[in-house]
Image 1 (cartoon, helix red, strand yellow):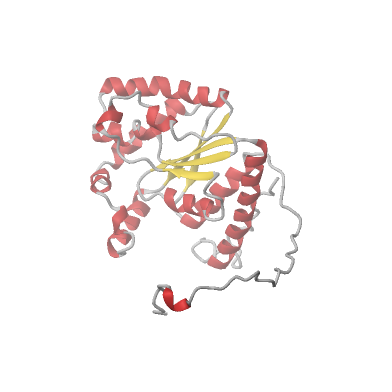
Image 2 (cartoon, helix red, strand yellow):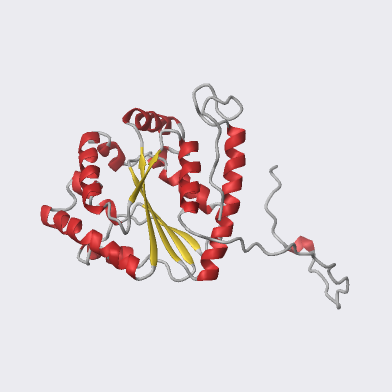
Length: 278
């Protein structure tokens, strides 16, 4: 089992800047250490046939995607995958609400990270009027039962809410406008949601009141500082699953056989190469 992330006092200048933000060198070292532990966890999940679902919810620009990327970066995508569903089709809108999400649940030996989830109904659908009152109330009644069913089926369900202040969210929105590689993240829905901070706060409070259940509690991640949020979330995730280190012993590679057995490589001129721009 991984030892928890032990950080020194926040005023330690070797660890934190004058603003209380972890220094990049320390962050990179801690992230690398945690990612090694994630690889160990993945091996354990496969070995024991565990089924894990991790839900990432929160406001726009709260840092969910960045944390998911740091989790998946060292892992095998065959056994750890991300489910980020688009808006439902007209056909899916006629299905049982949880149906399209259930199709992405893990089999034995898999972990699924949900970049937003069935909680869309309690958040954006509620605030933006994409569902009616009956649909919303039915979700609030059925969601806890659905999650208890998942738990009884053997699925380990972990739910994270990334909490960001309005001031920091606005700063990140403005930064996205200036950065061409991030501008795609500002969808028309994001811009519309930006006007409804209070409505989203109320929707989140009601959602927590109904769905923060013993079998699947909500864990709140303070995400005003992205580096802290990533380290804290990954560290916490690792602490929730008892795992053992199955790292194989050092492997020694033998020399390749030198015999070609009559193999003749085709002329290199017959192949198309990518131009050496660099």
